[in-house]
Length: 323
Ligand code: G3H
Ligand code: 13P
Ligand code: ZN
Image 1 (cartoon, rainbow, N blue to C red):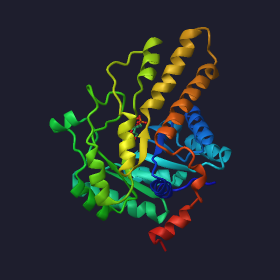
Image 2: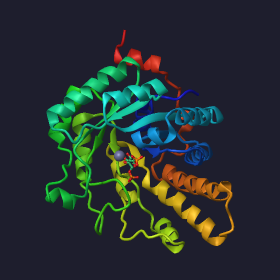
Image 3: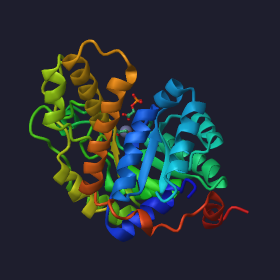
Image 4: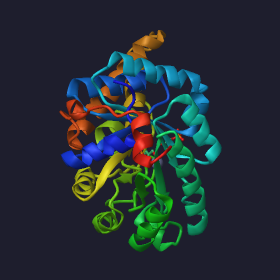
């Protein structure tokens, strides 16, 4: 099936009561590892590319790698999503490349500016039937919130924001942050905010910074010459709580990075004579597959690949009332 819009993916997830993993991609091995998991578990999947990923792949490589993934997995519903789009210009590029969904992240601006920039993106993207994720609040730990550096999403503001912006999904800040060092100790998340926000906005919520930073992945890296200390991620149970309360898209990048790095380090450590990239990128791809397969089970999307009657961007234009 062709790439599907995020709108449809998250609506289906809502119906089925599960969450869909949105995994960051930058190269062929990541895409293949993720798609192997989606295929074996018959799961819908969101492949997402950051601005950094677009730059790294020179855009066109990314486009065709994803096209290959779709061609090889005709039964799997796949969304191609722009992660943390910073401007209308970036959004335009992504839509030109064939993305079926974009995120506009203007959350670091004041509320009115965030509304204006996000609204502008919605008006543009919906003309093409492309879905839009916007963000309100800023990521970070709860402790940092006390220090005033981070703003959790305010449910009142969220209601007004979604009404004025008209986005298809809302990224919320509940105390997670990007990367491997999310908490100083026991994870603290404002999980109660999720149901409060969802009851007001009634659109699918997105959890960024959702890597769990599994101890065994960190241990592999450290055993084979790496140095990753005091890293803490988001417990799977917290994500599952989110899914029960309106979270439908779960962003995971760091866990895949850790998995790949551990596999590369282990391979080269165990046999320092190796120099064929396939010898270490193969195990790295397999490590991505293992993590993604586990997340598809954790988030409940496994087994739901066949539920989709694929919608096109033309179908979406009708839904958005584009003439
Ligand atoms: O949100 C950030 C993602 O982990 C992507 O990271 O900008 O380094 O590609 P990146
Ligand atoms: P992690 O760093 O927790 O994997 O989060 C990724 C993310 O939110 C991408 O947008
Ligand atoms: Zn993010």
